[in-house]
Length: 286
Image (cartoon, rainbow, N blue to C red; front, side):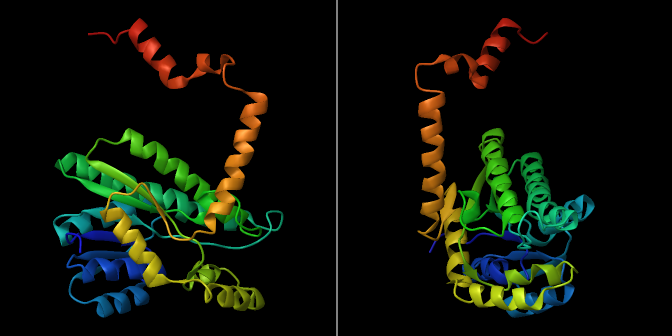
């Protein structure tokens, strides 16, 4: 078993987040579990024992996130891992989805994950400490998986892009992972109810039946914790996700071969190289 780690888990009162926290505690570490649901937090903390610390937080609100990060260091002393895992999903064809559903999903899944990562990265750097942020992406981050989840898919594409840039901007002391699970057996499909929106009873029942056929939450969460501890950049759990990723890559490769083949003038427009040229031509003032 790998060395014990202290972790912060957003969306930690249920589903995969709760199981991530459980794996951390079982490894001998401590976990701050972060969620909006006060009752679920209390129950989760009681279930996990004295090494779990509940912190009620709305990750879409900056002041909440900053206060939570301060409390996490106060409770744990040392924070090794942060699982930016809080998320919402409302299935609907894109022409039927609402601006409110858009704002809620992007506010939690993308903005909340970014603000969580930023808060802890800044503190690690200021304190001269090391840590790893593990974003919860999805098989949807990799390419098209199924219809009906357009807004959610968009948030998970955004997570992968955000994390990919962040890992290159951070100093070596701050590492980044992206966890990309497929179908997992959780109560995630009840996001509408959790967000205070009107629920379609039939759609909820169908969704719950579908989720019940997914991978056990403990297995998927264990892969996330193990992958983060082992320093993986991408953490995969479902082989079926390869299909969407391959289809996406095949389309990209075909378009590049036909429209921007090797040997064309594309090399003249590589931004990283152009930045280096500009910096060498215009050295900063002393």
